[in-house]
Image (cartoon, rainbow, N blue to C red; front, side, top):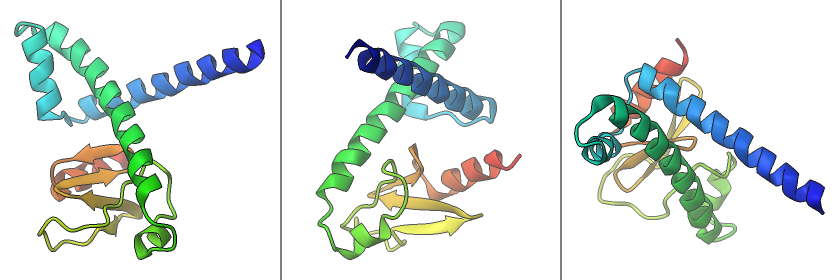
Length: 144
């Protein structure tokens, strides 16, 4: 029993390490979520060095939150529906089953990567972006 518990903690730590690596790569590519950066600046009283480290921490937490929400949303999609059938990708991908008045498709392929839209947010795997163009720039940065 202790081995199972220890392995869960080890998996959690390794997963978190990968999330930090991903966030660091985003930041080094010039990709920052403005809301998270604003919170980091506010919480650091404007000290940029401190804001940088807080941003990394907050962004990792946002990735965890997005993954959790994606699982919840995915579990609520009716089995057999067209959207459920489209969801032949990882569980962290989000597909909305309602439109938000925007006439863009729910998903499309860009350079072989699936990009999904929910409301006004675009998702590439577990990452979210406020616009389709930012999602494309992120994918472009992965190829560098």
